[in-house]
Structures are given as structure tokens and as C-alpha cells.
Image (tube, rainbow, N blue to C red; front, side):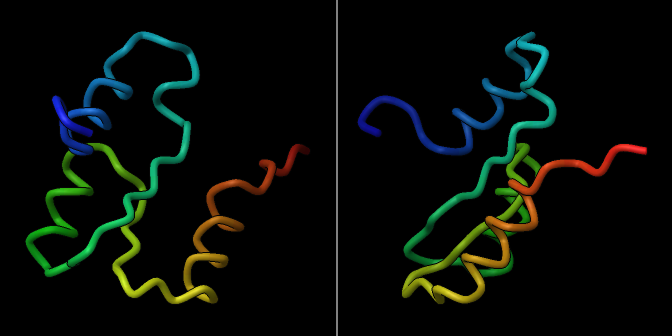
Length: 73
């Protein structure tokens, strides 16, 4: 993104006022994911962070976790 970074986008989504903005999953895909990067992703409103090289199994687990429908009673 040439004019805005992912952290800023996540913050903008979370405070947008859209009814789904608080619950929509945001998963970052990063070239590096040091502890600081993971913490910054979380504080900007992202749900998870996938580091490259991508581990397909872990990415799949994250997607299933965040995208499965909520159980209703």
C-alpha cells in the first residue's frame, strides 16, 4: 500500500463506525514477524499475523478459527 500501512488500515477499519468493523477478522501477512511486530499488529486491531514463509497449515488454522460461523443457541 503506497500511501498507508497495514496497521493504519486496521485502525481505520476498527474505528470506521461500520457495524461489522469490530468483529471482521483482520489477519496480517508480513515478511517478518518478530515479537515487536506481533504486538504492534495486535494493538492496531489485527486478530492475527502470519509471517513469511507462510506455513499453510497454520494459516489454514487461523482462517478456520476467524472465519467459521458463530454457534447459536
